[in-house]
Image (cartoon, rainbow, N blue to C red; front, side):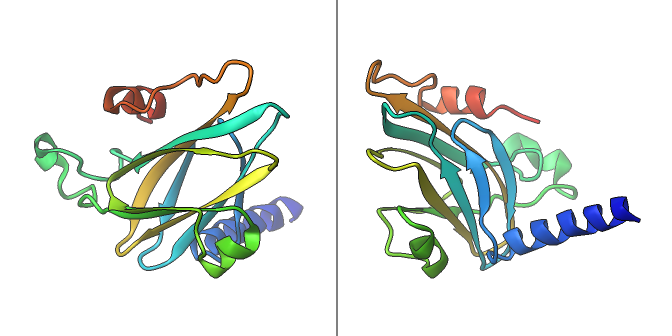
Length: 167
């Protein structure tokens, strides 16, 4: 019975996260796949580890396992969703994320988003994802340290595909 209760609790947590009523917590560098419910804001908190982190580099794109992403995908039209642009907002606090602003950075709706921004003296930041229709995205972030001022991935379109990968 405890196992069933645990599974139910996990399912409820996921539902609350999809509804924007609960924040999903991730560590920087973790690849995360999530569903954005139509018209609702999906909220992520990204924990930053390390004292010498100066910048965050991140990318988010549609999951091609769930969406049609190019003209060659017409064969799978019945099983995958049409491309859906999504907006992305960066907040400094949980209050701003829950209130849906004000945003430090705001990216207008698109099927792929990438951004680099400074994050000195902060242990976390918040990402809000919003789409008019249901969509599934893959999100990844990387910390850039003061010592190297380099990240392990580039935000060029080919590198985004390689870094985010397919599942």
